[in-house]
Length: 240
Ligand SMILES: NC(=O)c1ccc[n+]([C@@H]2O[C@H](COP(=O)([O-])OP(=O)(O)OC[C@H]3O[C@@H](n4cnc5c(N)ncnc54)[C@H](OP(=O)(O)O)[C@@H]3O)[C@@H](O)[C@H]2O)c1
Image 1: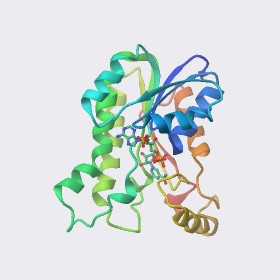
Image 2: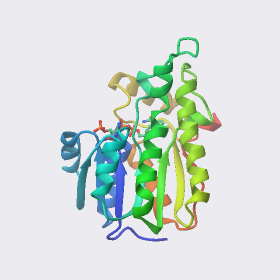
Image 3: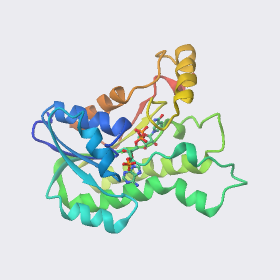
Image 4: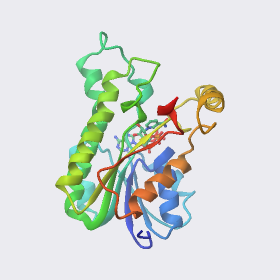
């Protein structure tokens, strides 16, 4: 196991939810939390909860020029973590009603990951790692339906990461597939309903917290024997 002391960890999606919780843990463990997302304002607000060293990188991971300009300013990275983007609830559409525009938006998570991994390759430490974020929906599609193309986007990220583990070795590349996690992707009323559902149905009897997810990302960063893995962090959702 490595420790994170003085390690430079770029977290894209660090202004909220799971990404912010990862930034907090990286800084707490003595690493440098390089916090990225589109909004500087949101990053500044999130950084108030960071106990340790951080840097802020506002950029849009879907804009190739923005990605190139940002990575030009970065000399080195030990670990790259991507939790952005997270637009699940706004992209639902049945296959019949799906337009090319909806489909392209549903796959944007893959394009963002591809742009950022490509820009990061030459900056990444050989004993560093990349962690991408998929969804448990790749194993257990949502019963709410209308998410087939969005699920394909999560699948694309997953397949991309496992193939990258081979292509970029010895840099390790892994994927986290989160279950239902209490973040701002859900409205307060949705969270109440989901909490009730989790208490009754989920094996662990509670909704996932960003901090529980962050623990898993830290494990993948620091365990030097894990690569090419897809780690389900879902409270047992796939078993019910
Ligand atoms: N929460 C769940 O229940 C759940 C379930 C399954 C999978 N996941 C996955 O987990 C990941 C994290 O989700 P979350 O719940 O933590 O979401 P979240 O709280 O909404 O965080 C998303 C982050 O991505 C940033 N972002 C969005 N678009 C971006 C872009 N184009 N360029 C750069 N940054 C961008 C956002 O900040 P800005 O607005 O400042 O850009 C924010 O920091 C997502 O990949 C999601 O699909 C979540």
